[in-house]
Image 1 (cartoon, one colour):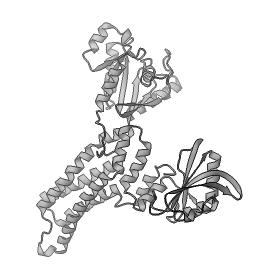
Image 2 (spheres, one colour):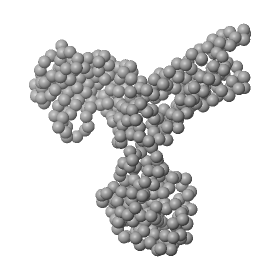
Image 3 (tube, rainbow, N blue to C red):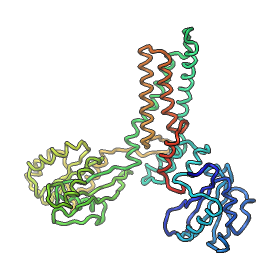
Image 4 (cartoon, rainbow, N blue to C red):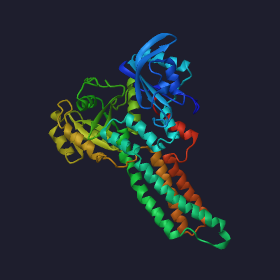
Length: 454
């Protein structure tokens, strides 16, 4: 564990061979440590936000020609002295430069330590810090815009304003407790009710936005399921427009989960082709079937295929009864429509089926439209606040529960000390969202999920 006084170093760009790589240092001695292995201008005398050409040498050995960017506190990402060394993207060069910096007193950064220092030094709050990681991992335009909106701080400012108003009322109620024997009411109960309604009018839309935000951030795990040879692998290949899965007439070809992602309507869908659901004595296939059932329980959407060329109405009814038990949104797909019995199509035509031919890519757009109908999202625009983080959602719910207890307490005419306790609970949960209240365990959990070098 590095101390706040240590100078930390890490590769800030992706691992692997590339044209260039950036090695980042932060800490009060970062400029001086970089200067010890840099041959060029004296970095310790250079102004902030300047770039300098030179070479990196270690014990007389020339490692690489580089550009060094100098950032002086407090005008850097971490609000500490900082340097960034741009070198050639050879893993060997990167390793040798970092090794040379470690010899001069730098310490390897832990995951997310640069962003953690930025938070601890007041560059931004915890919501904005988490948004940095969300921007890095954003895979759709909606996810990127939602993260940018949070990083700009609009959500944090609203939370802080509401918290400040609650703090005002909490202090008045605490003052009442000091004058308990005199029966004085500093915090008018009607005004407190109005304030809580005001806070909840902001909290409730945020809480309700999480369903949309979770889809935007994490995508939709979508399992393609059905009996063997229903056309699951063919459908996956057709949706992705590539030969991702092996297609064979032999039942049980797919024995493990094959998956890939596709963006539809600004939403990332993670499609998973699974082993066909059937009883089998084949040990390996049985493992695949078990994994299929586990995936179905975790899915947010199931695309269930029925083979229209080789299935009776009774068999379809039995399969429908089974998938109802899964309690997961299901789109029922009649596949191989080109080979279907006309009478069967007539019977199923009165039900909520999408009829396709995966092999001929027929009616695939109709299927995609049906998928998107289940997850109708409006595009996220600049300034929109959408809750995408489970931690934020849980704290907002806990805040709302505490405020409801305050309202119930006032209706029951409970004493001020009980009201104060619930208001303090609400303040605590709001404070945890932005980082006004933190614990070492909370910070460790959040920043451990970041990349090293960020």
